[in-house]
Image (tube, rainbow, N blue to C red):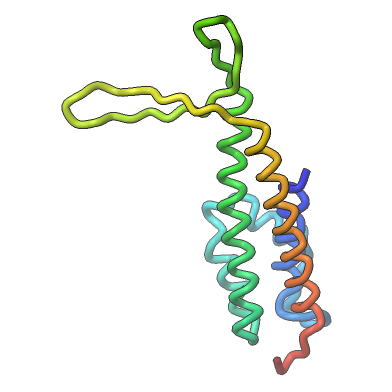
Length: 148
């Protein structure tokens, strides 16, 4: 839930650039369509950020977006791995994070890493902190004057 909220806030942040009342602002739905595929949206994001006159605002917004993308990728990996279940030799089950490695001179190896509740809780906390940062940045951007 925190990840979805953070993503919606990123859309609002990008839409609110450069400031409230500007002709260059756009609707969050328009941003969502252009940013939905995060791997191919860097040009659009850069063009939106370039509209910010204040370097500090631009850096903070770019940092928040970078943090979101990294957290989103990590979250996707953890969630994907947490739904995969392993069975131990004694018959107990556990969530897996699987890594495949091929080293020179040997065959492929499979390494299993457990995904614990603490990792999922930590992710939720990181997303919560990020949403608060994005809200603050968006507020700052919306209340800038055109000359800042």
